[in-house]
Image 1 (cartoon, rainbow, N blue to C red):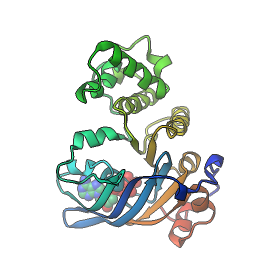
Image 2 (image 1 turned 90 degrees about the horizontal axis):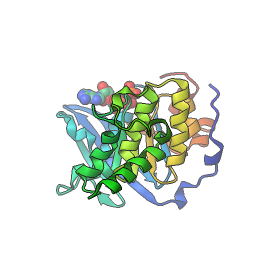
Image 3 (image 1 turned 120 degrees about the horizontal axis):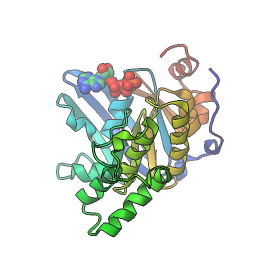
Image 4 (image 1 turned 135 degrees about the vertical axis):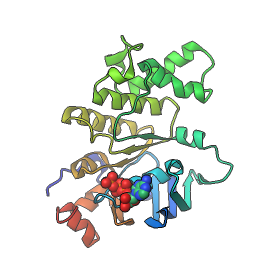
Length: 268
Ligand SMILES: Nc1ncnc2c1ncn2[C@@H]1O[C@H](COP(=O)(O)OP(=O)(O)OP(=O)(O)O)[C@@H](O)[C@H]1O
């Protein structure tokens, strides 16, 4: 399969960047079944890293390790170490609500709250005590919607329900909601899989803009998308991280036969 690779990322030297998040020997069990077998990965500040691999290989499970979303799954048990700026995010005294503001998440299916567009954005900053007056809150709402590329489309109907927007607009609303609580990392789990090609390309452009301010990790089934948006690509297979490298390398010169088989469409 031919994939068009994002030019800007090609000469990126991850070694010169700061490590934002780090995973060491991360294993996840669902009940007695080990779904991730000991993942080691550094995620660099202000990079976009894409997770690819066949269905069921553990991409989403690993993504959820990065902001402790697996805590919400009763039978999931995570071991190993994950750090954010060198701090253990699984430390017992850590405030998980605060962690999930720092490491925000956008899901496959847009999931706005059943509230107005304004309230979708205002909820988080209020919850986290980021503002103490309406004017500051208005400012956060406007700047978050602007950064998510949605402001001009919704500024005249902030009181309308978020669920009344189109799918692509709803996904940008969810991105704005994540941005509103000043995240450092944004995790995206197949953020475009429910969107049409135009809405998808808007989100992809947005991802490119957002990496100036945030670190992004994105799970995608779409290899063209990984090639378009990411600086580095991680290939997972059967619960293992097979390789992670500059996206161009992974798609043109994969180091492992399994990666080559996957990107050439031989399995998956
Ligand atoms: N809540 C859960 N309970 C039990 N097993 C689970 C759960 N979530 C995932 N698994 C299992 O863990 C393994 C990894 O699943 P995961 O969803 O992380 O893979 P994935 O690569 O993201 O797949 P896909 O591309 O299909 O979304 C699979 O075998 C899956 O069946």
